[in-house]
Length: 330
Image 1: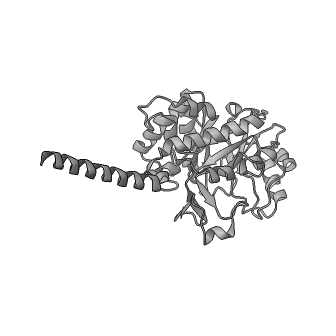
Image 2 (image 1 turned 180 degrees about the vertical axis):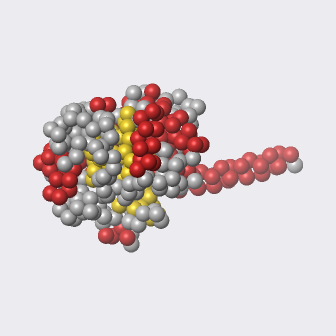
């Protein structure tokens, strides 16, 4: 009787184990991925590829600041491999805009973000903060608070990042220096949506009439055409004779249906890496960013997004939706 009971238990345990293995294997991408680490690996791969072509090329992830810590928390040790792969960190909504534009970020949220940002800062990385506020007094407060924290900042008066603010005038910490490296920059302009400019020439003229030390823009104009190497070289000129860095925006945690790589067939027959549409940004779709086919679109080939950016002579890339790991961790 005892032997039969033991045998039955053994058989049951074996069957249960097989069932778990079957579930695990069939849903490996969802259950067997450490999502923060997979994003770190993705960014590191992007960095290694870009710097093998141009060692001076800058890698700047925006948000997802938890990745600088080994355990994703301020209590963790710095994640050395990830920090070595990047040149700066971008952060939105640090002092204004976290819950609502033109509203100060809650002290608790601000302290949480600064605790992690300072891990990167202590590792020698520049912190680029974009606050969303439009009242002149709040824009002044944003610049002052970021300066006191040791961060480079831009007070964006539009969440769409489609304008060059008229305040402050002159721009914050304006200078005539030639900027060759991010640590030399004293200010930056975040202008990734050129929809208010009728032509590339109009966009170029507007930017070259300013003295920002660093420009973050999109590789493509509103008509879908890419800015050329000649045009990017023009954009590197400040109005006062100095030179600026020009960095290209690139989303790696979402696919965008208005990009050159998008296939119409994906609307009816999605590749396995393409996930749900972002309800807040129409035309933007979550991606299983650890998938090799998606990563191949982003970097590693002559037709990859990153190679197009490098060939256009940008000085670096601003990686967005780094915090895509949050979607999958839920």
